[in-house]
Image (cartoon, rainbow, N blue to C red; front, side, top):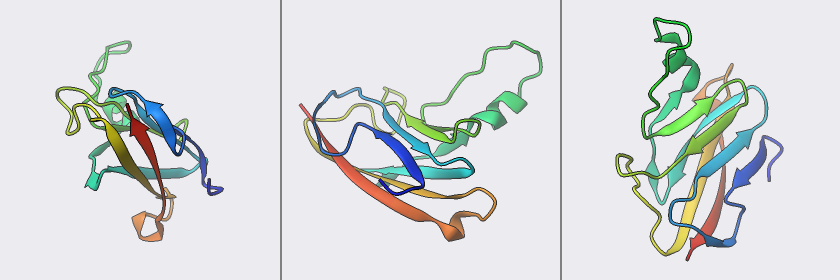
Length: 120
């Protein structure tokens, strides 16, 4: 993994991932990014922007079926679901690219890391 990517799930070249597996990327502090799965760039929402839109303390937030960026942890998470662009991972090989960049510098300074996993 590059120094700016601390971990990914499923692990690169995983041979027995499940159809409903989450795609998770832990970035270095101060980084953000987007996920491209099987050639499709998924919409990303910043969890803090969802929390900022709340009107009452303790109110539950509704997380949309897209990639969620958690700025406090510098993580990206995508969970396949019926409402998401990817409902489930079909059997076979899937390719994931995380395009990531320093928050302070913007996407113009982006780098990428690609890996794949196999769903049984």
